[in-house]
Image (tube, rainbow, N blue to C red):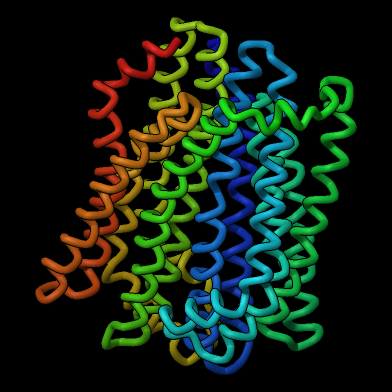
Length: 439
C-alpha cells in the first residue's frame, strides 16, 4: 500500500496537469467550431496548425524526458550538486533551441504549411503562435527537473495556471476581439510566458536552499554531457517517429476524398488524447520512481513500483473503454456547434470510426507505462529501436489496407502502432529483467 500511495502522490498531480492539456485542445476546438459560419473549415485549419506545433514541441520534448531520468537518478543517489547541473543543462539547451526556432520561423513555417496543405487561416495562426515556442520549451526543462526531484505538484500548479490563462484569453481574443483562431494563438503566447515566470518563482521558493552554485566547468564536463546528449539523441530520434506518425495522420486525413474526414478524425483524436494524457500521469510516476530506485540501488522497491504502475495503467485503460462505449456521442458533441448545418453529419460520420477509439485504450495500456519506465531507467536506446519498428509497421499497415478500407486503414495502423510500441519494449528488455538489473 505504501508503494501505491507513492505512485498516486506523483500520478494524481500529473493527471491533473495532463488533463488540462487536452481540455485546452477541447476548448480551442470548441471555439473554432463556434466561430464563423463554416465550422468544418475552421476546425480543420486549427487542426493543421496544432499538428504543426505538436511537431515542434514533440521534437523538443527530449528536454523534459532526458532531464527527468538523469535528475531522478541523481536525486536517488543523494547527489544534489548533479541535480543543479542537470537543471542548468536543461534550461541552457531549451533557451538555445527556442531562439533558433524563432530565427528559423519563416522556412520552418512555409515548409510545414506546404507539407500539411495549410491555408491562410492556418498561416496566420502559425506566425502568431510561434512566439510562444521558446516559453514552451523552457517549461519542458522545468517540468522534467521537477519530476526528477519527485515533485509533481509544481508542474501541476504551472500547468493549471497556464491553461486557465489560455482559456480566459482564448475567449477574450477569439470572440471579444473577433480574432478567431489567431486569438487562440495570442492566448498561447500570454499563457506560456506566464508559466515560465511562475515556474521560476516556484523553483527559487522551494529549492533555493538545495541548489548549489552553478559551476559551469561541471555543467559542461564532457562525461555527463556525453551521456546527456546520447540519451537526448535517442529520444529525439524516437520523437521524430512519433511526430511522423501524428503529422502523417492529419495529412492523410486532409487528403481523403471526403474533406469532412479531417474534422472527424481531429475530433476523434482529441478523445484519444484525453486518455493518453490520463495514462501519462502514471507514466510520469513510473519515470520518477524508476530513476529514484535505480539511483538508490533499491531493486526490491523498483520491482514493486514497475508492477504497480503497469496495473494502474491497465485500470485506467479499462475505465476509458467504458467511458467511450457509453458517452462517445456526448463527447464528440462538445466540440461542435449543434446548430451548425453540418453538425449532424460530423457526428454520424464519427460513429463509423468510433470502434477504433474504444479499442485504442486497450492497445495503449502497456506502451505509456513502458515509456515512463524506460525514461527513468535511461534505457533510451530500447525506446528508440522499438519506436523504429512500430513506426515501420504503421506505414506498412496503412498503405497495405488503404485501397480496401480507406479511413479505417488509418485508424487500424494507428491502433496497432500503439500496441507494438509497448510490446517491443517489453520484449527488448527481456520482460523487464534488464531494468531490474540496473538497480
